[in-house]
Image (cartoon, rainbow, N blue to C red; front, side, top):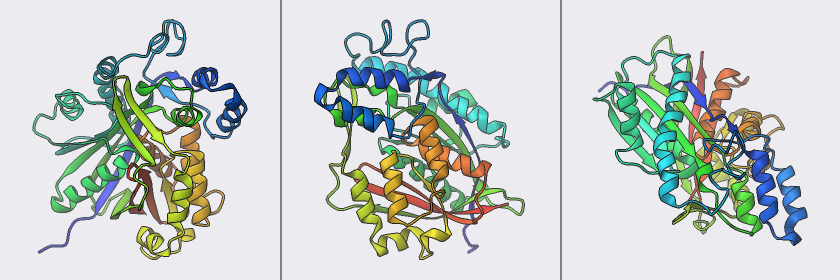
Length: 358
């Protein structure tokens, strides 16, 4: 039998909504937090490393969703109202990312569509909606839901498996998340700081087999690991008022502890020194990036792409890693080999080994 084909990520397109809600959220959250925690909230918000977060939610006359007339101005909306917005806005944002991708690479002959999204549900699924609007009635579809921040790895890993089994496949991978649909009423500082991280965004990528003219990122061997005794640290709970995110403050320390395990690091790097690789790390938060950088003894610039995405967009759940990869494709690092790494509910670490081809 012939050897499996190599899978190549050819290009990535990205899109964010027009409404920057980061400052408005900070003002709203500061008014919710208990007075004894106000100074702590200010310090944590200032050091979060986030400048902008974008939302599909409009306010009134261009104001933010928490202002008078905005989506969250009065009693918090129910889950049905939030999902109604998701059903319209998520496909539109995904298609904007696909339009951006189409400016970078030809999208003719798509055979498979892999969509990851964990911030909403609709049936027919968002995969069917996107396929219909793209005129792809016969494309094979897969919808990856509710896996959280590492779903981009799962989507790319799936595309890799498809291409390796069928070298003629042309796989369109889409990640789209509307995290700002899930604002929750609380006075507790930990969930308020967790909500401060999240924004909306979408990304689209083309994955094909590699030919002699391949350009982009080769998708190498995947890996997956669940960190023991950590399943309660990252959770989504479906409530009558949207999806409640629980992001425990112990997550960065748990990740740092795990990355001090030589066996796990060897799994991630295939035995190569971590400092000799480039790193595409999901920008889940400044403290998470600090934990990865410190545990792997990476230099101060190693996670520059991740920190830039965090600053410009916040944590967009599954779309975030794709934004990081897009930055690396636009400005390739000096080294050829690298690792994509993301963390999410479980607490699980998932990733892929990568190699630039020019």
